[in-house]
Length: 282
Image (cartoon, rainbow, N blue to C red; front, top):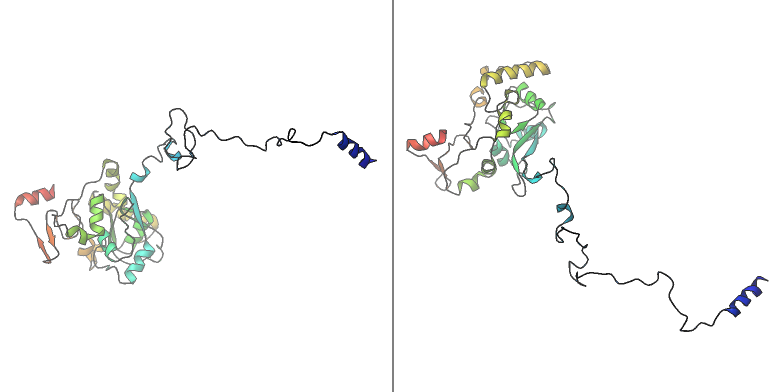
């Protein structure tokens, strides 16, 4: 019965001809309206711009800027240095603990990757990882340090100082040979900007512009906080080395601003005029 009913329906349908052939609904796509974008090229498939929008701007350039991510590439960065890595470099003999440790010493030992390209580094950040194994007595100069890292260095009888270096001074310390080959007099280190003056004048972080008498009090206060006996560095055989400091305008140890280092002659040229000495102290 079912087959005979379908056959009757087919018999009543019109014959298939070219006149009654047509595609199913939705089978044919209409051509896209490119509106002058062209048929080929890098800009043919770009989205159409709206009113007041530049067609060639990237999508992230059209996003709003907020305070926490504005000028991110201009913010100061610091290369991390852990106490574990510092102790490792000392044990390997790459760093001499009998001499002051600064950016130049860490750059010469090839222990850190001082990549000066596409970075905005301004110094070293001393971290507390490895505080339980650190046993060296050093005079280290960094730019930022954690409280536990400061306590670990002072617990072993060492001294730590947080100092500011501008970008030019940082590049000079990371590659002194390139800096001296220019043949120019050694420049003065710049003072910290206004937003960093409070940090580098704080004796709690051992700022290099803080009062030395207040630093002594904070050393004892930190020892009382962490429960260790503060060693008396005045009776240490390395006392002269531990108390060695750079002038706020000085970049290299033993070299003052205005001097010229000749690598070919292996000599240092010092100016005779008193004007250069006054300029270096300003």
